[in-house]
Length: 253
Ligand SMILES: Nc1ncnc2c1ncn2[C@@H]1O[C@H](COP(=O)(O)OP(=O)(O)OP(=O)(O)O)[C@@H](O)[C@H]1O
Image (cartoon, rainbow, N blue to C red; front, side, top):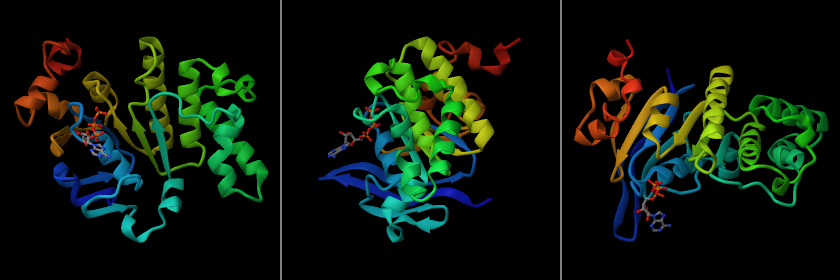
């Protein structure tokens, strides 16, 4: 299978600081990759390099087989959904206008296609039609988060980048959103890269988990592999049996 995203010898420096260090990774279509690691280890930097919001100091990044050095980054981003923590909606636009933003750029002459895309992505994230004409300030945090995800999905992207998307909501809403994103992944087969601080969330959602430490990939494996065969003490501590017994198959008796 050809990888959807491939990074080869990618480095990122800020001044003399090496943030990403000779990173190599291949991500196949329809994987749900969760990215975990301590604060400041380079998770967001890695994510933003996929859609060219951050450019590497050296190395190559391929998306759908094309080196992003050779593609128009604005075009590239239209195929890559991006959802981040908190409300990043346009405050002066309604829910409908927020979600329609990218599809309307794509379907300039076909208003119906945009309308359909808005309806479809609202359905996917479970937003009621009655919300369409509300402004972001008229929504709860969880609803705003759903609109953010609907907006990221509306242009039917091949890849969805999510940076702590559920970080700012309460535990119940978070668990609902986790279920929804899992269903969206199963229904659409979209490739997802999902940054989280929460190892439990990473193990539950990811088809593969990418563990980072100081700008390097320490392990990139199926969740069960991390639990059964942690690559080092750092990973072992992260997936600690005492703290997450329910995630360990031998304890699910
Ligand atoms: N524009 C910048 N200039 C200088 N240093 C930066 C810049 N952006 C990020 N960094 C540094 O790069 C490192 C990695 O940042 P990054 O945001 O990728 O980490 P992270 O793993 O996502 O952290 P967190 O979990 O806290 O969000 C940090 O030490 C950060 O201070």
